[in-house]
Amino acid sequence: MSTDSIATGMGSTRSAQIWLLIGSGVVAAAQIGKAIISIPMIRADMAFGLDLAGLIVATFATLGAFFGLGAGVVVRRSGVRRSLIVGMGAIMIGNLIGAAAPNEFVLLTARVIEGAGFFATVLAIPSMLARIVTGDERDFVMAMWSAYMPAGIMLMLLVGPLVPIIGWRNLWVTNALAAGACGVLLAICAPRQTGATLVEPMDRFFSDVARIVRDPRCLMLAVAFFAYSCLMFSLAFALPSLLTSRSDVALGMAGMVSALVLATSAIGNISSGFLLRAGVPIWANIAAAFVGFAVSGFVVYAGTPSPAAIALAAALALGVGGLAPGALYAAAPQAAPSPQAVPPTIGLVQQASNLGQFTGPLVLGLWVEHFGWRAAPAIVAPAALFGLGVAFMIRGAMYCQAEIRQGQLEGKSK
Image 1 (tube, rainbow, N blue to C red):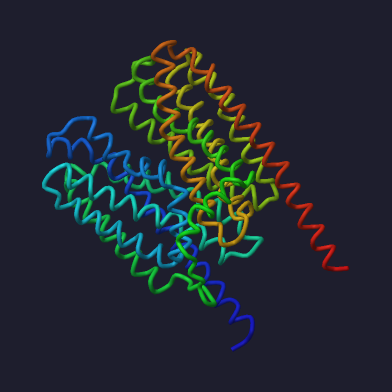
Image 2: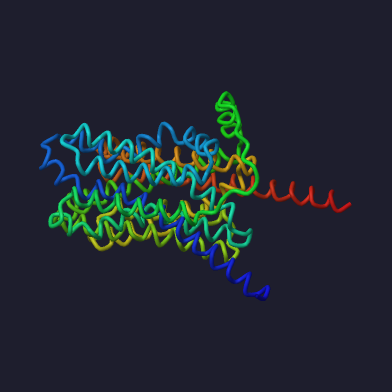
């Protein structure tokens, strides 16, 4: 067999592994969209209030907001491959328990199990991707990975019309089968770590966390992701209310329009990969995202445009804003203090993202309740400008890092 054919075979195997990892992330994220579209039927079946319904939907965000960084450290210590396979297994088990749940408390327990599996999966995958892709491919692949969340949610929104026909419990079983299939494929195909794995004592848990938190580059990425999540989820939260209360759009149509607008976020995620491959710097993608939020906010919130104009401006904000997570995920392996610190670094970024999911809608809702929709740009624009400032700070930190590496290379050459 020729050298070229061997290289081609290895390249095709690695491509299959990359797509399997990204696809597994989409399956994991589908567990968020699954709850969103199923909650009306679940409430009718189990007869519980909106408060518990909100907790069932928000379980993943709750876990991420409190345990993201710690989960990243656990993934690192347990082994990325093991965490990935066990995580998919936990998603499968959680779905099976949820499908058979006799009451809301068992269902909530099942969601907690799913959430643990979700974080084991989505923290392990980018670490594994960063290890198997080459330097030229890394930014593009990590940007493609960042689309896993909107892609998974949109996948469940697309099957929404089938839920009343098949029932929410069968949807849970279907997700269990999908997660189980991914787990089996990962056990067979996921790359194994070469060399011996060093098992470190658990008493270094807090020292690992402190090292990540003290690193200014990691903090910049986390703060930028927090600002992005605040703006993105507050807009997603506000859009249906804006369309129904200010533009007299029917609730069903407002939900459909909002889902279509949300899809532009995935387009932005994927687009950042092509921009990074074309040579656009990471910080420039992040800066463009916050400029998009700042400009579009005045049209979405302050003006009195038609529903089509509101939807178009929101799509622009989410589409251009979607450039940020792809660039931030691409920057995480570079910002991590060491290759072993990639999972906890991504855990910190994920924790900041989930905090933003809470903070953005909450602050916007309180502000609008007191001052009205027209006053929303008064907090949206400063938040976007703050994110823009962080983007330029990331630019400076990355240039300093590049100069240090260049100096090290020149020192070795001498």
